[in-house]
Image (tube, rainbow, N blue to C red):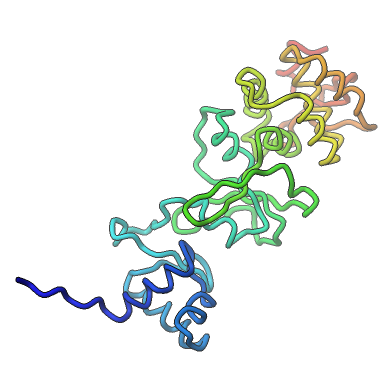
Length: 267
């Protein structure tokens, strides 16, 4: 009968750290769990990385490599797991939240993250996963729900906040046409109410949101309480329906500039 081979010391140490830290490992996790100095912990992480047991996400942060992923460049089974650590305070939003809540059937390649942390650049690729980042103020960090992914709690915008965020910045919704489709599904599949949209729009306090929302709601034929609510909250000045699209035609009653192709059903 073959004797069981002892677990290598390094593997045993890594197992200890993982039991304590969870899915993401930092230098502090190693120093605390193994009771060693920071310099020693940094060297140990570098050695594990060289051995292929963990993968570096960014300076000082690593992810364990599952056996099935050995030799692969991408080791993250669930990219959402690293959002709180790398970008927090942050939440999953925009097109990624729209996919989660069933507001769209379109599949987007990257993960959309709204963060109150100062970050360099709007796009980051970590372990083969693309993250699209939008910097927001801390006062805009509301309207989210917690989701547990393993031992990690990840915040995601609720359906109404997802719609309002995409109206605030159509780029994180894949463009205004896709945002309009998401709004259609929001009502047709009872994902939320007009009252929720108005309440969240008021709290976000961007007048362009109600101009875009009112125009789109009227274009789709209601609901009436949403159209009226948007009309009551119109602010001065004009806003583009989508800042990324040339929009020179003004729909006066909504104070919104739209592309000519959107005027077929508007006047």
